[in-house]
Length: 261
Length: 254
Image (tube, rainbow over all chains, first blue to last red):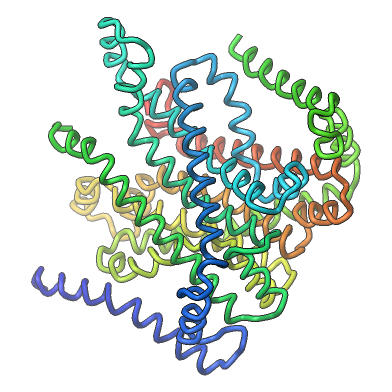
């Protein structure tokens, strides 16, 4: 087989397989005719009805707001704690047992506690809950990033008597940035999951609320539409983040490309 | 000497917890004191009900992770070693992977019901993706020279897979197992909390409906310890299985 033919075949498979899967799903659900498993076309129609865009404000905006605010708080706290911990060995050994414990606990185990502690099932509780669990990937990656810095860089800065805050701003933070971004990407995916969990547990609006209500009323169409929405949300947020990352870390990639490994 | 700082730090945190609650900075009803919680935990671990629930959660985790590994590793090897298959399934994988399994809870609840099947499906689905992706990366990252060498020694397809591809993909696969084992535990607990399949999560739901705050805190504490134990067990297994690998040897830099 010529390489050209192989390439053409490969690309057509990449296009054909998803289409075939969708068609198979459509035919299967059509033949099965079970209200629990509506056809993809029905789901898309329901999706348009629910989320594009007549009820966008009540169902999607609150969830997005919680994701973004929670994620932003987590990033700020994670980096602000991670840099000093990355620089201090004593600080790390004091903090590690706490970090190891809290990141190993399954998030839903703290859902009831978050409601008890904060007396809220609204934004305060949702955002704190999302922020809390999103801290750990950022924090751990920041610590690793700071620890991985070339010691010569720090020593050079020190011998030039560059003051500590300048050293952190100009050397430590930029050097750790690629790894911080890796942590942020994990956190963003986690934020979507934790958002759904916390809304599905107790809420009055948001995508998780649509899931909750459709479960309680045995409505399968909005349930599938909400699952589709959450899938798209996860996909788009990840794609958006990669775009931002590529832009912010442009200098880093350029540097790596210019340096022979 | 190296253990002093972590121990002091844990003691300080426990003391602070006791203090915040005893001084009613946060009321004792909302945040039971550390000593109260530990007492509740102590009486909890003396009941058979706790250990049965504990065992049920561990069972959901183990079956979910095991099934995910049994499916994801072969599929990952197949997709990783064939460029053609990888691009054919790229779009479906990229689209299914970011779907948070949590979104499937209501659907499972209404289709499979409050059964072990729902819990295992959820845990397997969640644990499948990290393992699949890591296995694919690992297989793709095998040194082509090693493969060519094996080929020139006329090693058959399976021999090559067993002696070259698998060992060099193993560190990646173990990273996948580590991620997936956390995910599987989260989802086993989630299924129990939200769908009522028996286990620690269901226990938590039950305590919450009675407003038994001391025990809710005790149970959350215990769940955290289970998470830590699983994390250490999987890491220890990884170190043992990969003891020949440079990244696990003493004095390794990475």
